[in-house]
Length: 427
Image (spheres, rainbow, N blue to C red):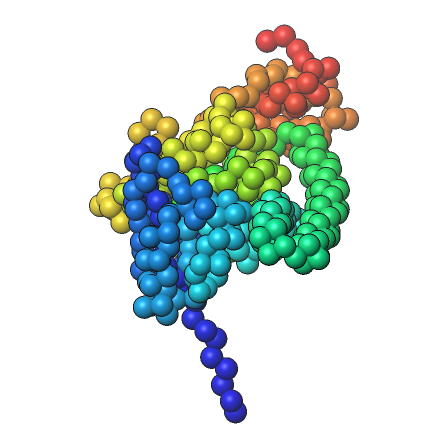
């Protein structure tokens, strides 16, 4: 039987450091990680320092020739730029180099395309991809116009421009359809959130740099949940393994519960348009009562990862939400006997070694309880269903069954407090 060998994808990485970029080496290191997420092998890396980019090729003709020689020497079939390329720069580089040319945004889009599982995530990826393509068609049309003008062939120019215009119109129509479909999905989520709001169960969102261990933490918390009936989430040691928001119910020993949402991982310099495309996926973070920022403490750049995550949360207007910092993977850098440990709002744990999970749940409970309202009520037996809600959604302080009803003192969420006002009694 004849065997078909899939050609290995080998890439030359290219990056330009500008005067205001103090983390260039980190950016290039992360670019290599993005490549690995797509099974692309970086074969060499070329960089240079510039005061400003070259308008035609971003790196200048001399550097383009150096890149071309590197491609031929290493037999690479990809050139990947760390920096974003304009439509004309991408077009010029594709003409000058003997292989496919991508920039960081295109690379992330390809990863997103592979990782998307649900219908909504696939639509979001498609929309972001079309949004990226659209101005590049305009740039290609401008290049065709210049080529036609130089040759004097008006018919060729008109034909090329017409095709670009047709492609542009087709993309715009497809984007309009996707916008409508995504709007419908947004309405569905809105209804689901309203139902959760009525239940008043607190919501906790896992956020953090990609590959920090958010999905692993969710699965670990599910295993210690009192009612562990929910399916876990996929764990992979790769960038952007999670694109779809997953929500699970965590029930504590005393019956208190909260909803836990796993969200897409963040990264440095995530393009705003990609962030916009996945805004709906990140809504769970924006709507949460508490955010858990999961941090890979073993990574020497963990502080910069935290800064990038906080910056993204601010862009999402979620910077005001209470936050706990879950410093994960501490088993790699700290003695196990020191774990877990709490310093302020930072809890140092190891999901892999199952150290600190109980302490994390207790800390979550403390923070959520701080936002609860005190109620003292006499609940008629005809409204006894509220007793279970108080137990699951709030914190029961005292309860006694009296002749005329259930006497309860508790701390509950504001939404539930409003529903219990008719049963309120003076202390």
